[in-house]
Amino acid sequence: MRSLTVVLCAVLLLVTFCAKKGTVKPPGGDQLLWSSEAPRPQWAYEEVYASEGMQPFVGMSHKYADEKSCRDDAERDSRLRATRFLETAARETFERLSAELGLTGEVFNPSNAARAYAEMVSQAVIQNAKVVKFYVEQRKSAASGEVYYLSFAKLQVPDQNVKESFSAYTNRKKDEWKMAQEQIDRVNDAFYKYWDSKKAEQELKEPQK
Image (cartoon, rainbow, N blue to C red; front, side, top):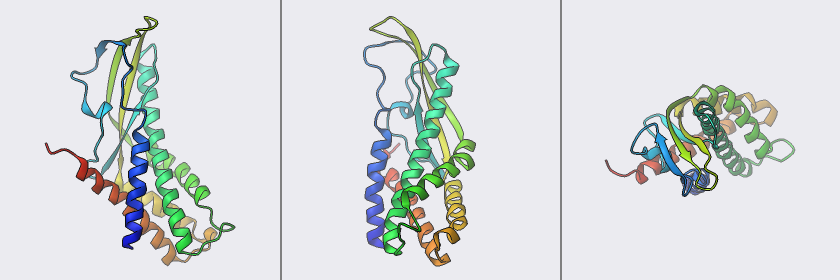
């Protein structure tokens, strides 16, 4: 069990790094005309940390001519990032456990199982999660002179809802996967440890206030 936890923690670090790529830098050289708050909030461009019982995901919009469109796009991006993250977490868990439990590809495919879980959780959990903060900038392009809006959205996904949705999914699939309840419990436990290790890692990285 200790070796499993170590592997899951390592995978988590890779996933967290990849999820943050491409979201941390503003357009270079473009003039800032207005922002919804000043100074720029730390969560918009820097590492965001989990709060009690919640996991944040920050979405970034494309450039838009109006503020509402860019806010909507940032919100969509935050929900998409949450869905992709949970799909990766589920796939890594399924791949690890399928070998340990002796499951064959004809019965259980980790990628398909993770994709199906992501589809379910996107409807059952992520679409109902709340965007708690927006940050909006109005900028002028240095290259074209075009004035545009850029937005960031901070989505909070409840830990408990994630865990409950995963258990509901695996228990519903038990007969299809031809897995005993003991095996399902092991899969669920591995996913919970994966999720909790992520929270612990963030606590270690969070700067002291």
